[in-house]
Amino acid sequence: MLCLNRYTIVLFSSIRIIDLRRKQKQFRKNQRKKYEELSDQQKSIIIKLLHSDDKSIQLDANSGDTIYLKTNMFIHQPQQIFSVGYDNEMVLTYVPEPWLFDLYNSNPELF
Image (cartoon, rainbow, N blue to C red; front, top):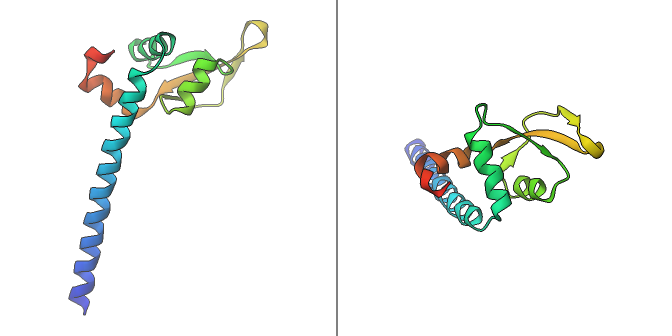
């Protein structure tokens, strides 16, 4: 009985790992497709972000492009520090999502 429990644990652990890898692969495929469908302005934000020295960029939090990129998991806000720009716009610092680095490193011609 004890031996059967060990096999069951190993089997389900293996299935979970395989399923997780499959989901990650599908997520990256979907995100690449979303990247290819971005507007030129949104792509330029991402390219500027990836080519910056510290891999961060300050953007208006209420901009449509910023909201879209954040909602679709291209960028995220690592901290709550912000500054107020012209016309009382809230300027936040954003960094790329980790999957975006992987895509950039594997397909630099895409950017």
